[in-house]
Length: 493
Image 1 (tube, rainbow, N blue to C red):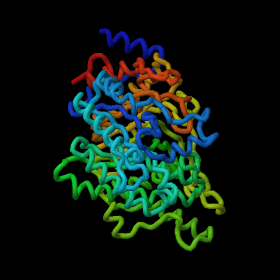
Image 2: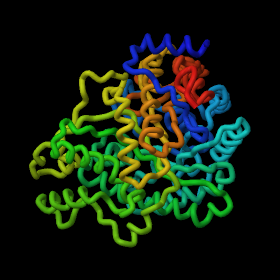
Image 3: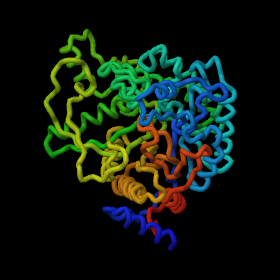
Image 4: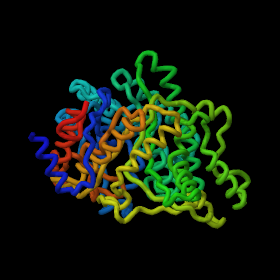
């Protein structure tokens, strides 16, 4: 009854638009929470850690709100046992976190291993497992070692092999205790924001070229890491490997064929560029991208397409390099068909040539891009399921931003409504979703937004040198979901 009273109260405060599902999650369904190394660890130069591109980027003025950095962040490098205590209190099945490449290999290369960084992660992983929490480990969450950026970063094809050696190092060091690996987190953000638009570290503006060269390297690097695990480590470690891809649902603005085509094109550009080579039965980059970019490149005077071509051998090597599908999603965009942009300077959005917007009636968050559209989650799950031949799907990020308040009914409503859509996808549509990961365990450094947007179910006092953590109302609600596999007080079996 106590949970019921609390739950009803917060729903009323948040003015929920729909009743949450009373279906119980399947018995094998697992719940977790997530963070990323640069966003929480701090200790940016401690104990032999090398500089990464976000260290470098944030130490320059005017890149991040209030010139904030992740130098200390949540100080998880020194307070990891506090994090374990929080996770244990929540009762989650797993914790998705990332390794700081520069903390393990300060130069980015595998010839120099920083033992202090290795010890940190080994101690942390051991503490998680001792408390019944499975580690879900991401090898790369946007924080490339700065020395590797000095040779060009991800558009440089040399990084395929350099990343593969980093992956081999991680599998060797931690693979006996880690059974769920993710190679890259959201390569679209790495490539488009980092090397196309220049809006995130390392801040390279080369739209129409940089993001495609980056994508070409990343999908090959992922595949090489997968094959290394498959051939060298799986027989003894018996783990799984995937890649984390993000997508917002693209809803056609009307029932017209043109708007439907535009919405599908957006999904292929934003998600398919990375998903198709790995998950699609045919492999390769999406044909709509291959055709459009080749045509525009020719008209712009390029001798070949700006989108690198995957050879037959590369297509075969990349295709099927997954054990499950990891999906990050937060929101939805409406999509309208538009005439192709005029030929001129190359650019990703010119290649795409669609118009997007968000309905002003949708509920807001603290992030301008994040509107609350729970029905989009169900549609996206169905699209992924049907496009990629019914894989096992783990939702590896989903969450809501506000100003960090402890009483956060809007976040509770977000979880209730989005998880209702997940249940509908499972039970009504037959989509094989086996896990859900709330972003985030705690308030943290939110990239270009610094500390102005908060996603945590634990509050962090960034004015306190001790970085005190306090559970929010949403944390208590999520704890009840994990314990009962149910969004309300009593669920149907």
